[in-house]
Image (cartoon, rainbow, N blue to C red; front, side):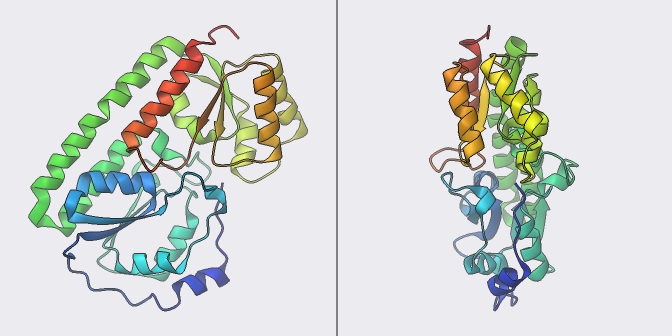
Length: 296
């Protein structure tokens, strides 16, 4: 899960981009860079026509583990007035790029700092609805600071955004009531925060952490995972649709053979959906799978 950017490649990306662009609000919007597209979507929903957002990780068909920054990333950061990133070791390449392109009047939001997540914690912070609410408040405050003439617009959109999260919270509460304590498992901890809020009993977490940290799971952890599937001790297998390898494919095959429902999740927001729609779609798919398999 940790994305490493070599110092040599970093120097190549940044070459020629240390000079910062003029800081006036551009006619086509305040320039904003989001490390991930779900944060870019958040900024767009709050900023409306007053922002011009560039999202770096935006392809749901791309394995985010394999991402490498490009010169265009450096150019976008050089001009940005606002930057938002995840932190908690999820996008360390972004932190290195920011350090190499310092700007006194650029506002930088690290979501992990807002929600007190640290290195070693599950970095998939956007799968907790309350974390996105905190990020939205910080973005609205930053936009107001950078563009006070549209402060009322930003505050109105913030109110609308927070209200739009309520159906998600309602869905989570209803599923918690229906499925709390239900055993499930996952190939990676992408869905971890949401699973916890649903009250699900997440199994094979050591396996998931090993995968997240790019280390090989132990033979005993692999065996325990396979037995959970073969013996149908879990009601659902959650898997990251953006990463595939021989081990995860083998687990998917075992789940299908054992008739354990499989629900795919993604780390990157689909291009044709908002954050709210994306989360609700995945919750609905999980609800259907759990409801169809209450007795494994």
